[in-house]
Image (cartoon, rainbow, N blue to C red):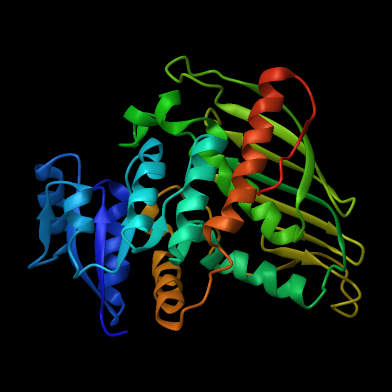
Length: 340
């Protein structure tokens, strides 16, 4: 395959980072963009310095363009299922912002379309390319802390009117829940680090911001198939800077964010070893490593390989979120329904 033509769906904040990452990749070219308004699309192309790109009146018009082989879905979350199904049926490879679907039925419809089409997918859990995440994965791969028996990951971010997405993020029919809107990064991370599937969850939730149509704070206990246990939490009401807390307790040591304690790995260690690195400590999308993610997406297309962050894998993360939200709503423990 030669140069990959890319179409962008949506002209919000995150779409600009996708565009910049594609511009930095020599194998891709931005062919065009479609958005809710032509004005938004024009502004995004101007902001990112894209020239000679088309502005499509609709997604259908974009998908009918043979110059496009791949699409980035950067529309609001409730539009993702229809967008993805249409892209798959048109034979386009798809990079999907999270959450991919706010309910299990929509997710199943997406999976069926992608499986039938055989297109490549990557779901935008962009923190996998954050240096702290990469450090932790390397330590785990070298068994610095042995087998994980307990894990915690927290996503604390006061998403208020200072963010442009606030206008739709407060609406349940668009954002879904605090977990699906943003806390899903914590669920993805705990699965990524523990390397096991969650079997059962129990959660509680509340809210303090009355403008939100759903609970803005949730804490959930997890039981993994291996017997490991864990906790995830999300808070939109937190009164502090953005925080993404990671705690991993293993049979041979412990990792706390960018600190590690492992006497069997570091001979003579007497205190925490802290590694100065770039942490996931900002909600600003310009802080996120989209270039690594999009380079990975492009490599998957060019080499005809599946990504470990494809829609199939992301479906498991979403299934955990659905179970946690159901548990918080019912006050009951919920088994996680496997992905069919």
